[in-house]
Structure formats: C-alpha cells, structure tokens
Image (cartoon, rainbow, N blue to C red; front, side, top):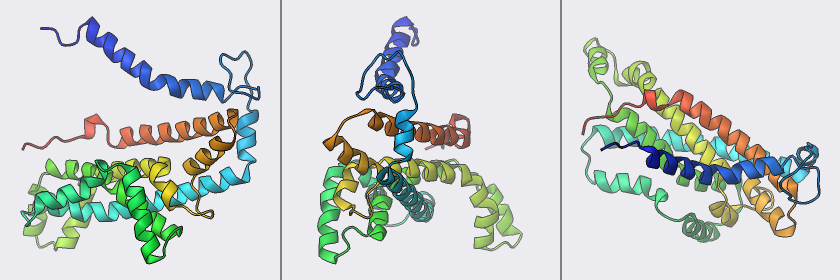
Length: 264
C-alpha cells in the first residue's frame, strides 16, 4: 500500500496552508497604508512599522521580553543539563517521578500555572519583580531544554569518555573536553527553543508581570483590548520574523540530520 499517495500529499498541504494562512494574512496586513485592518490591499506602506519603532511602550516591552527570554533560557539550560545527565545515565531512586516532574509544565495549562505562581508570589511578597518573573519563565521552558539535551544524551557514544578517563583525565575535564562538545548541538537547540517560548509567552505572564516588567506579548494584549489597528499586525509580523529566524537557526544547529536516535 502506497503511504505517500496523492490524498496524503493533499491532506498534508491543506494542514500546512491551514496553519500558515493566518500568519501570512497578518504579515500582509502589516504593510497596509490604511487605518483599519483591510485585505486585500492595493498599496503597501511601512508606516505602521515606523509607528511601532516610535512607540516607547512597545520598545520597552520588547527589551523586557528580550532580557527575560535570555535569562530564562540560560537558567533553564543550567538546570536541564545536569538533570538530564542524571536521569539518562544513572539509575537513581524515583527516576520516572523526577523526569515527570521536570516535564510536567508541558501538560499543565499555563493558565493554571499562572494562577498558582501568582498565589505563591503573593505569599512571599515577590509579585511583579523581574527576578521572580525569570523564575516563572524558567519553570515553563525548562522541559523544552531537557527534551533536547536528553535526546542528545540517549545516543551518546561513551567510548571517548572511557578513553579519556583511562588516560587519567578527571571528571570535570572529561565533561568539558569530551561530553560538552558532543552534546552541544542539543544544548544550543534547547536554549534557542526555550528562548522562543519564553519570548512568546502570554498566558502565564499576565498573572506575574507588573507595570515595570510588562513583556511584549502582554503589551500587545493590553493594546488590543483598547484598539485594533494595523500596528498590531506590524508588531505581530516583527515577532513572526524574529521567531522564524530563530527557528531557522535552530534547524541549522539541531536539524534532522543532527538528531541521533538512541536504541531503547
């Protein structure tokens, strides 16, 4: 039976069009010269992109999101690498429970996480601080980093480590000179994936941000509740371009040709 017949290809094409059509429409509308969201348009203008770049609230929110995503992705990587190595390499007690605990933010709705974190911050008095916002974002992006690091470790060839150890290299030297370079594509890919998810996070951030730490997705949500004009499409198009660039970089670093599938 042919698996990739015309019907399968047509179905896959329809799914791709269904997923990409809203993004294409938003990006096209961002170039309209009119005051309303209209499509189709016969003229193209950069006026709304210029207005975004001159809007101080959006600029400040962009830098907040950029700093937050960088910090959250870095924290999640520092947590995920040793945790993934421990879970993959050692038969520690409660291994399945710990793995489920680290990956649980993937299945818990962000709305629930936002309410829980808001309650916790109200108890400790840390609501709205940038530090606690970093912790909250690191919590929800750590699973993405862990999955890629664990995937890199599953098919890892230990012969180079054993050879280095037999020649007298200490544990830290073996990790720094042998292990780290070999799993670096997974670590880098996990960091980029965590960065993208932190930068685009909205649902949980609404409950945690303060007026001084408003992120770009939250700013867009607040602006959309007051008015709806092509400037929102321009901001969305810029985010799509940034995300697309990072995804292309992610595929370049950790593409299908770099994935090593371990034998279970």
